[in-house]
Every structure is written in structure tokens, then in C-alpha cells.
Image (cartoon, rainbow, N blue to C red):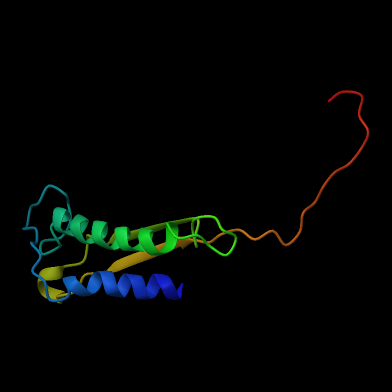
Length: 113
């Protein structure tokens, strides 16, 4: 979680105070006027997702296999009015690794295998 926080912060920081295009009223997407233009949102998503992949999915974990998480997703909320709020709202979702605390086995005799 700490690696995700610092990676996200560092990847988003170059976009702080950047200029992003917004959509106008009557846009075919149905989103509110002033919301971030989707291609600009995708640029931010690609940059941050790439950094998260490099730091959380590519390196080997303590078991020597790639990944500190099973999967991740970074998304920009496309419904926030950027023009009036000056905010871009994002979400990072991480699927944790599974840890086997118990292993249950059924053992028995059978005539067919």
C-alpha cells in the first residue's frame, strides 16, 4: 500500500497545475460540461498505470515471483467538473496476493484414478 501511495504521488505530480481540456455542454458522452476531456484523462491514466505496473507488478516479491499485488487499476473520475473545481479525482484499486494460512487435503482409497 505504501509503495502504491508513493508511486501514485510521484507519477501524478508532473501533472499538477497542468492544463487539461474539458468538454462542453451537450457533449455526446452525457457527462457534465466542464468534465475532463477523455483523451486527456487517458494520458494521465496511462502514465500512472505504467508507473504502478513498474513498481508493483514487475519486481519480484519475497517469494521470488513477479508482483507485490495480484492486479491493479488506476482510473480518473470522468464526471467531476474540472473547470469549476480545479480537481481531478482518481482511484487506485489493488488486488492483494493470497496467503495460504491453511491447506486442506482429502485423502482416501479409490479403485479408479
